[in-house]
Image 1 (spheres, one colour):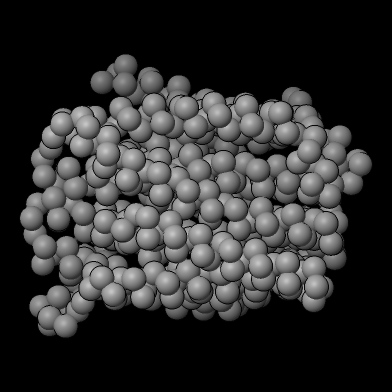
Image 2 (spheres, rainbow, N blue to C red; image 1 turned 120 degrees about the vertical axis):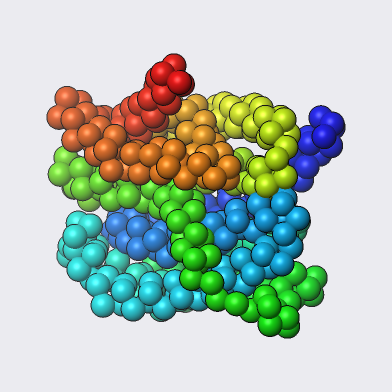
Amino acid sequence: MDNKNITKKFIYYCLPSVICLFLSGFYSIIDGLLVGRTTSDIGLAAINIAWPINALITALGVGIGTGGSVIYSTYLGENKEKEAKVTQYNTLITLVLSIIVAFVTLRFSYKNILILLGAEGKVLSEAINYSKIMIYGCGPQIIGVGLVPILKNNSMAFTAMLSMFIGMITNVVLDIYFIVYLRFGIGGAALATIIGQLVSAIFSIIFLLYRKNINFKNKDIRIIKLKRIKDIIKISMSPFGISIAPSIVLVLTNWQCLKYGGDTIVATYAVISYVVFPVQSLLSGVGEGIQPLISFYKGAGEEESIKKVKKLAYKTSIALSILLTIAVLFNIRKIAIIFGLSSEAQMFFKSGMFISVLAFLFIGIVKLKSSLYYAYGDIKSALLIIYGEVVIIAPIALIILPILFKVNGIWLSLLFTKLAIIIIEMMKREVK
C-alpha cells in the first residue's frame, strides 16, 4: 500500500480518536471547574477520591468495546465477514453482562471502597453522594464509551467523535444548570455526566442501526460463543488497564497526599489530575486511533503497512507531547486560579504541576507502545507494560520518593514511572 493512502487512513482514524479521548477527559475538567468554584477544596477532594469508582465503570466499557473490536477488525482483514459479525454480537452481549456485574458489585461495596480510598468526614459524605449516582447510572456510561471503538472499527471514526462531542455538550450544559443554578453540588456533576453519556449512547446506537452495521436478523450471527467472549475479555484487559491505570495511580497518590499534607494536598492533586488525565487521554488517542488499522493489516498479513503506520504514530505522539508540555507550562498560574484553589493549595500546585508537566514528554510513547502491542495481538507484552506500571513501578516510586523529597516526591513519581518503563523497554530491545 502506498504512503499517501496510509497517511490518509492514519489521519482518518487517528484525528477523531485523539479528539474523542480528549473530550472524554474533558468531562472531568468541567466537573472539576464548576465543583471547585462552588464547593471549594472539599468538593474537589471528594470527586478526586471517588473518581476511581467511575473510572472502573468506564474502563469496563472501553476495554470490552476495544477488545471485541480488535478481533472484529482482524477477522475483516482475513476476509471472514461472518466471524466478524459474530464477534460484534458477542461484544454487545459482553457489554450488557458487564453492566450487571458492575452494578451488583459496586452497589453493595462502594461505601467501604471510599473509606479504603481515604475518604472521611465531609469528604466521605460528598463522595458517597457522587458515587451512588454514578453506580446507578453505570449502564449509560458502559454502553456510551463501549460503542465508541465499535463505531471506529466500522469505519465511522468521525461519527464516534461526533457522538462524544454531543455527549460533552450535554454534560457541560447540564453541569452549569445542576451545579450553578440548582446548587446540586457534586451530585449534580454526577447526574450531568450520566445524562451526557446516555445521549452519546443513544446517538451511537441510532447511527449503527441506520447504517445497518448492527443487523443480527441472521440466526447464524446471533450465536453466543463462550470462547469468543473469553477472547474478548482477554484482549480487553489491555485497553481496560490503559483506561484504569491512571485511576489506580490516583488512589495510591491520594493516600500519600493524605499522609504528607492532608485535604489541602489532596485538593492540589485533584487539580493536577484534572490536567494530567485529559493529557493522558489525548495521548492515548494516537494508539487507540490506529488500532483498527493495525488489527486489520495484521489479519491481512501486511507487515510493511503496519511499520508505516507505527512510524507515523510515533512522530504524532512525540509532537503532541511537546505541544502539550509547552501549553501547560505557560499556564500553570492561570489553571490554579480557574479551578478555585485556596491560596495555600496554589503554592503546592505551582511546584507540583511544573514537575508533573515534565512527564508529558514520555507519557505518549508509553501509551502508544502498549496500544500497539494489544492491537497486534501481543497481549503478554501489553499487560507487562500496563500492569507492571500500576502494580510494581508506581507503588515503589510513591513509597520511596516522598521519603526522600516529601510532597515533591509525590509529584516526581509520575515522571519516574514513565522514564522507568521506557528504559525497561529499551533494555528488552537490546536483549532481543
